Image (cartoon, rainbow, N blue to C red):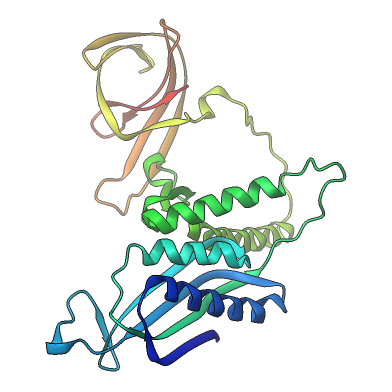
Length: 296
């Protein structure tokens, strides 16, 4: 374990004193990691205070019979910048109640990794500094608002559009990316061992395009006119009539037969006479229609 501890018989009385101790401990951690060209990804900090008279320990956990508090700092990418790590610790401690008279502070690197190094461009036209600033901004926002407040979409292996992604804390997306990279490598190896069978697939077909804006949930629409081929022609949504100029599809999605509500849908991309493009579908079972996305 990569750890750093501080303890004293003379307790800390202020947050300024705690900051000074944290700076020393963070530097001790980074000294161990820098020798291996590594930086912190997740760090846990624990403080232990003096016993509170009359058992008044409201708001604190107990360790070794003493009130304690702990926080966890997560980063988007491995980082070895002492100043930035101290700033993230301060953001967390500002939202945390501290026990009176801190006599022990412990830091532990729970996750770490190789720090990114790149050769800079000759004339300074390089995005390394910009990416570094973005990652530090995400770290600060996650530290101040909490990891669950700064989210990023993550693709899932589902064909049903509303199940094809989830939102995960941005500072934890690197772990998911590593898992995807490992899985992709295994798939490439398996594909290399499989005999190649060429086939023509039109990747640019209009009905295969997906909208950038997906509604939180499909909204029911009243299909008023359909053609003999069961293609949409006129429908009503949000108390307005919409006339279809042309359409593409259907794109059939059938998935989840093991679920209580399996998806059996025909999706159409429709262009209205007003020029708007919508993504609608018809359910196979009850033949009702829904609007699911908007092309912008």
